[in-house]
Image (cartoon, rainbow, N blue to C red; front, side, top):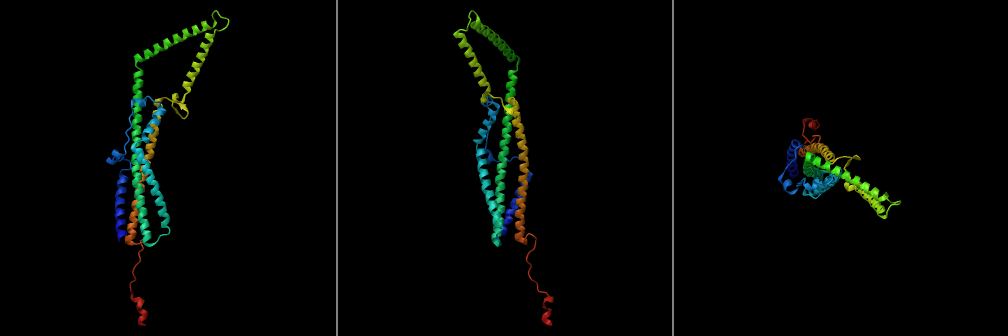
Length: 297
């Protein structure tokens, strides 16, 4: 009787829970507990914008990994690992169980599945929340990139940049003339000063090449092709959108899994009340006249 009551209670609870999950599989739950204890609040700061685009991605991931939200996700993963191990153990034990022990194992199996789904639901909500926040910060980064680009493209900035280039060109032309005069005018061979000067220029070129090739100064790439910082961030947003679609599918699977666990609990309740899974319950023997005819012959 005690098993019957607890299984009935579990079946009702799981049925209600799975129905609610089916209705909200595509909606992110925002409980106050999650918001207070498992939050992550990334900000597209000015310092973040100054980083190369590929480093921005790593910085955001690093910030997330250190957040309470990420730490809670690790805890949930450990809980799910322990629960799945217990479910596998119970399924093995069921193959050899009989009588009351079988009922207890079946009840615990449904209970463990329900626990697993509760933990998976929390993990799903946190992962979806983190993805939404990553998309938001990438959008903020893109907006700041556009603001910087618009500012740099103003007429005054363009004119100043052109003047700087013209001045640089004139200076390089004069430097070339001086270099040629020092090395060739009035000398059959180059002077020690000219040799050192030329050597220094060559080393400067080497240093400039090294700077251009340095990985910290490298342009971000997608599939091996160099792209702008804006294009790189847009690709990150596209990847996040694809991940969002996968999470939507996972939410649907989660709702169906909850429904199956509720049906398992309901089947146990029926079995306890009405007999085995085929609906066959042992019927009491009823005395019939035909069975006693031989007594009167």
